[in-house]
Length: 290
Image (cartoon, rainbow, N blue to C red):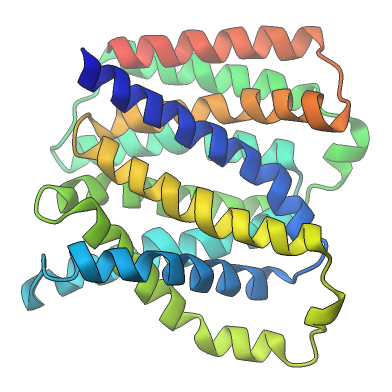
């Protein structure tokens, strides 16, 4: 019981930190171009992770493991986070939340195709109900917010969603053979190295001196919490429960993001917010019970 309570406490923390990432990401994108922000984010996360990785995770894999770990690092970390930031810079938070909300359905389908999970009627119904709740939340977004969305931004965010879904499924298999720190640390080392040329290119002519404390704080938050700590929790959870169950909690992100907007941005609690949140929680509950 204590083990399950501790696990789900960590998952709730992960969801909270990821939910805040939508708002903080928008703040950071006011001061950094997306490519530079992604490179700096992975580089800083890699610096945080390197000592722990060398201490615990570096000796847990061999040459035969490199293809899988490289795949997870390239697609699950580098391209996923790059597409997320580029998409967020070109579309609205509401659209991003809806598109990312499709992720658990992809996770379930990919995991079932790989033979490591099974599709049940309750899981399918729960995910569709939760997705409907996300649609309710998006539908109550302001006209100005919806006007900031673009087709290109939605498409890039959709690519991030698919990449994360594939990472969620195959990351679970990797955690059976390697430590959470080892897989996560290797992924960020690969991501940081791949984006070094991009960082040098984007840094040319960029005035770092004009970045505000809020901009630097946003960067550190994105590198330490949603990039590093959340990924560690995600891998830890994947090693203990099914990928579709972990991914189902993604549906809670729009609810929490809007509650954070109420607390910090003065947004109002509306009837669609309450209705959408209720539907999402119902869908997550059904998925967890499936």
